[in-house]
Image 1 (spheres, rainbow, N blue to C red):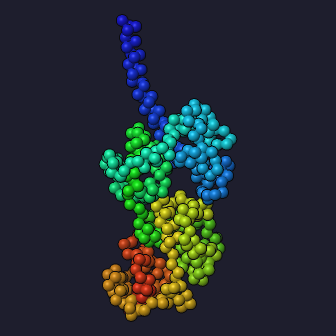
Image 2 (cartoon, rainbow, N blue to C red):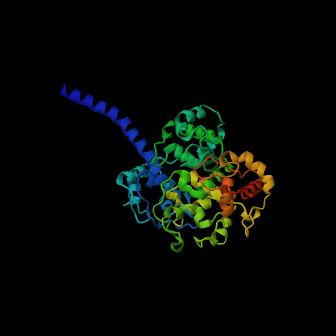
Image 3 (tube, one colour):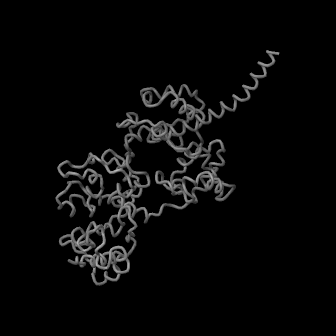
Length: 433
């Protein structure tokens, strides 16, 4: 009787243990996928401040922390990147063997990852890799709206990402990502976001994930005009615009000779180094008492925004630590596409607008006076006429992009002659005594 009971218990335990082991393996694989993406976010660890010695590529400028991400070296398709071979040959390898490799001198993760982290990574490498070419081919054979991809997205994903895929500022709009970086999107859909609570869709099957990619590719793109204007407000004062914490210490790259008391947070503003005319020490801003001697950003007009983002993330700027991805994207879009030649609208010698004040009066009274008053008396307790005469470059920048954290409309899509005319009229307004 006792033996029979023990046999029954062992059988029951076997029945229940198998699903638990399977669930545990699946959870380990998807967590390994998140570690592969960005282990420092997933494991809440800190990547070294120096570049990974094994990362030799000079093709792509990246932040030192990113050189420690598995995906940087081995790619989203697991076939390798930047001249470094991939991990596809390690499929079906014993996860313990892979975990041990992560501790060797070539990888150097022994002190950075726990044993559990390394085992999860080993499980992903051994059994979690996906044939991205096959998955993309499957996606190409699917059609938008096929099956229930839109409904799955609307119920599983939209609560965080929004129905248009653009709600989260920590990541690019999903439509753009799915079109520009499909393999990355497939990896994240299968495994989830590092350090987040995004559901991993791996157990729903690759076909479901492939069809989800097709649906995501139908979502709208970022509105470039809105992104540029938002970037202009971030250029002005990102700390105010994002509601972020004011920096208590001066920016490390800010010249000590140009620093002035009680303004540590000011040194983190883009305009503080690069000027309202975007020419840095060569422009009008250098003639002020707080000249920095730093060059402007005019040379970056037309440069690929991703390259500008890499600079913003670098040790010379350090903005990756304080701004979200969409903020960096907007700021890069402004620098690349949003700068204007201030000299075309403002006389650099006199500071006066080149526009027609008489023509600008009607535009000002209908478009601007609702907030600023017919006489220009209402703008941060300073008179509009005085502000536009004392610093027309600052005023023009705000007219084009709006004020940080404010509802002021951005006028950059309006005819530049109209903008110049409005500025000319504002410069004629006088304070009443």
